[in-house]
Picture (cartoon, rainbow, N blue to C red):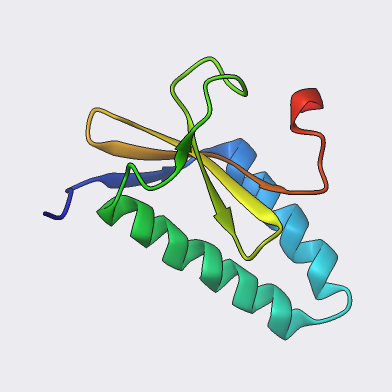
Length: 99
Protein backbone atom coordinates (compact mmCIF):
# COMPACT_ATOMS: atom_id res chain seq x y z
CA UNK A 1 0.00 0.00 0.00
CA UNK A 2 1.64 3.27 -1.08
CA UNK A 3 1.90 6.05 1.45
CA UNK A 4 0.93 9.54 0.40
CA UNK A 5 3.84 11.33 1.97
CA UNK A 6 5.14 14.76 1.12
CA UNK A 7 8.93 14.89 0.86
CA UNK A 8 10.65 17.56 2.96
CA UNK A 9 14.42 17.85 2.61
CA UNK A 10 15.66 19.88 5.56
CA UNK A 11 18.29 22.57 5.13
CA UNK A 12 20.97 20.46 6.90
CA UNK A 13 20.26 17.52 4.57
CA UNK A 14 20.35 19.76 1.52
CA UNK A 15 23.68 21.20 2.69
CA UNK A 16 25.00 17.67 3.30
CA UNK A 17 24.14 16.63 -0.25
CA UNK A 18 25.68 19.82 -1.66
CA UNK A 19 28.94 19.17 0.19
CA UNK A 20 29.02 15.53 -0.94
CA UNK A 21 28.31 16.58 -4.52
CA UNK A 22 30.98 19.30 -4.49
CA UNK A 23 33.60 16.94 -3.09
CA UNK A 24 32.95 14.17 -5.64
CA UNK A 25 32.50 16.60 -8.54
CA UNK A 26 36.07 17.84 -8.09
CA UNK A 27 37.20 14.52 -9.59
CA UNK A 28 34.14 13.25 -11.47
CA UNK A 29 31.03 15.32 -12.21
CA UNK A 30 29.22 12.31 -13.67
CA UNK A 31 29.74 10.28 -10.51
CA UNK A 32 28.52 13.21 -8.41
CA UNK A 33 25.34 13.53 -10.50
CA UNK A 34 24.79 9.75 -10.36
CA UNK A 35 25.04 9.81 -6.57
CA UNK A 36 22.44 12.60 -6.34
CA UNK A 37 20.13 10.47 -8.49
CA UNK A 38 20.77 7.54 -6.16
CA UNK A 39 19.75 9.68 -3.19
CA UNK A 40 16.57 10.75 -5.01
CA UNK A 41 15.66 7.15 -5.82
CA UNK A 42 16.21 6.21 -2.19
CA UNK A 43 13.95 9.06 -1.07
CA UNK A 44 11.25 7.64 -3.35
CA UNK A 45 11.77 4.15 -1.88
CA UNK A 46 11.49 5.52 1.63
CA UNK A 47 8.26 7.27 0.66
CA UNK A 48 6.87 3.90 -0.44
CA UNK A 49 8.30 1.98 2.53
CA UNK A 50 8.80 4.47 5.38
CA UNK A 51 9.72 1.76 7.89
CA UNK A 52 12.55 0.38 5.74
CA UNK A 53 15.32 2.05 7.72
CA UNK A 54 16.49 0.91 11.12
CA UNK A 55 15.48 2.91 14.19
CA UNK A 56 18.01 5.39 15.46
CA UNK A 57 16.79 6.94 18.70
CA UNK A 58 20.33 7.30 20.05
CA UNK A 59 21.48 9.66 17.28
CA UNK A 60 18.65 12.20 17.43
CA UNK A 61 15.90 13.17 19.85
CA UNK A 62 13.06 12.21 17.51
CA UNK A 63 12.30 8.72 16.30
CA UNK A 64 14.69 8.88 13.40
CA UNK A 65 15.38 6.01 11.04
CA UNK A 66 18.53 5.41 9.06
CA UNK A 67 18.85 4.01 5.57
CA UNK A 68 22.25 3.05 4.17
CA UNK A 69 22.85 4.06 0.55
CA UNK A 70 25.69 3.11 -1.77
CA UNK A 71 27.71 1.54 1.07
CA UNK A 72 29.12 4.78 2.51
CA UNK A 73 26.13 7.10 2.88
CA UNK A 74 23.38 7.23 5.48
CA UNK A 75 20.03 8.97 5.15
CA UNK A 76 18.54 10.00 8.49
CA UNK A 77 14.79 10.56 8.25
CA UNK A 78 11.49 10.52 10.10
CA UNK A 79 7.81 10.63 9.21
CA UNK A 80 5.41 13.00 10.92
CA UNK A 81 1.92 14.10 9.86
CA UNK A 82 2.15 12.46 6.40
CA UNK A 83 5.44 14.18 5.69
CA UNK A 84 8.78 12.47 5.15
CA UNK A 85 11.54 14.62 6.61
CA UNK A 86 15.05 13.95 5.34
CA UNK A 87 17.02 15.11 8.37
CA UNK A 88 20.61 14.48 7.26
CA UNK A 89 22.56 12.74 4.49
CA UNK A 90 25.95 11.76 5.88
CA UNK A 91 28.94 9.73 4.85
CA UNK A 92 30.08 6.73 6.83
CA UNK A 93 33.36 8.57 7.36
CA UNK A 94 31.78 11.31 9.48
CA UNK A 95 31.56 11.14 13.25
CA UNK A 96 27.79 11.51 13.55
CA UNK A 97 27.96 12.09 17.29
CA UNK A 98 29.83 15.36 16.74
CA UNK A 99 27.47 16.82 14.15
